[in-house]
Length: 93
Image: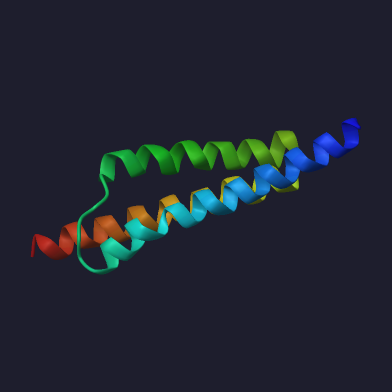
């Protein structure tokens, strides 16, 4: 019974990570359409803290599901941050 619960929890966590990643897509779409819909300071903090979580996952936890989920979030945060910084400089030219 415990193994089934752990497997279910692992699956739910992995799917939650994919859903979270997809949740960033409306912001990415806005930024690609030149709508400044993301706060640079917030995304700097989220990108840095997610990077630390990623490193912790690789070097301490050695858990592939955690690493995949966190790195999807890191990718999404980084993309939003890069697009937002690019848009900021594009709008201020």
